[in-house]
Structures are given as structure tokens and as C-alpha cells.
Amino acid sequence: MVSIINEIVVRERLAGLWRGVGPSLARTVPGVGLYFTSVSWIKSCGLENVLPNGVHSLVVGGVARGFAGTLLIPFTVVKTRFESCQYNYSGVLSAVRNIVKTEGLKGLTAGLGPTLVRDVPYSGLYLLFYDQLKKRFGDNTRGQVVAGLLSGMMASLITHPADVVKTRMQLEYKGSSAVTAVRDIYRRSPKGILGLSEFYRGLTPRMIRRTLMTALAWTVYERLSKNVGLK
Image (cartoon, rainbow, N blue to C red; front, top):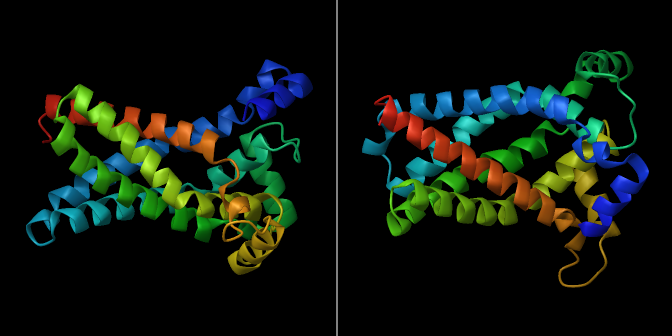
């Protein structure tokens, strides 16, 4: 990861480390709002009364993330392309126009399947781990932060292969199926243990980003929920 950071700084200076921050905010800010709004609504439906605790957490986290992820997939596509060096979009709207012009509306949903395969289990597993770890570390700010960090690490490790497939489909395999992308990624992997190393490329930076972001979001959500009487 350090060598990649050095390469980006040499090629693009420090500004290169913030490539894609615009579309990232355009996706993340409304995405967080949609996700937690969905979480609150689903929890209010009383599913915890009919589902076991673990299953309830998986359903709430997964359904909420699936809803938000599907609505915001165009911004995910634009964000991924902004962060690569393969496209020279001048802004989010120009990127959307360019994608629609060259690839049609389908281009704005590239990688939706792998995105949901990544995000739905990630959020479901995250909430499952988070709820269980809070019982161990305490339902206070410190306990929530620790539970959030550990949950993010475990969920990221499990779902990272889907993130690799999603990214490759949005950059290299535009218009191809997820099966084609998986097959080609596997063929590129050094045939070591199970030959899956290529599916874990970029795990460290993703784990750091997702873990910190999700832990922070959930800690703020928990505090706000208690302060306004949602819990």
C-alpha cells in the first residue's frame, strides 16, 4: 500500500490521493442518510419480535444497504472511474453524460450485481457482529467504537472478493457478466493457496477505509438515536 501511495504522489502529487472525492461525497452523503433511514424504518416494523437476534441483524443491515446501494449505483460507477487513471472526466455530471452517451443507461449500472453481493452481506454481517460485540464491550461510546472497528474488519475480509469483481467490471469488463469477470480474475491469480490472491488485491486500503467510515457512522447514529429518542 505504501508503494502505491508513493507512486500516486510522484505521478499526481498529493492531490492525487483525493482523486474522486467529489463523486465519493455525492454517493456517500445521501447513501448514509438512505441507509440509516432504512435501518430505522425496518427496525420499527417489529421484525425483532419474529426473527432471532442474529437473523434480524442480517436482514435489517442487508435490506437497508441493498436499497441504498441500488439507488446510488450510478455514483458508485462514477466514483470508481474517477479514482482510476483511465478516464478524464471534468465533473460528476459530465461523467454521467459521457457514460450514457458511450455506453447507454446500462453503463450507469455496471457492476450492480457484484456491488450488491459485496454490500448486502457486508452490512448484514457488520450489524450482526456489531450487535454481538456491543454486548461484550458495552453499549457506550467506547464500546460502540471498538465493536464498530472489529465488525468492519471482519465484514471487509469476508466480502472483499466481491469488491474486486465490482471494480474490475466498472473499469475493465464493461458490458461483461460477473461470471466472465470472476473467471478472468481467477486466471490471473498466482496459483498458490487456492489461487485466490487476486481476489484480495487492495484488501488493506479498503479495510481501513470501510472500517473507519462505518464505525464512525454507526457511533454517530447511535448517539443521535438516543439523543432524539429513536431508541
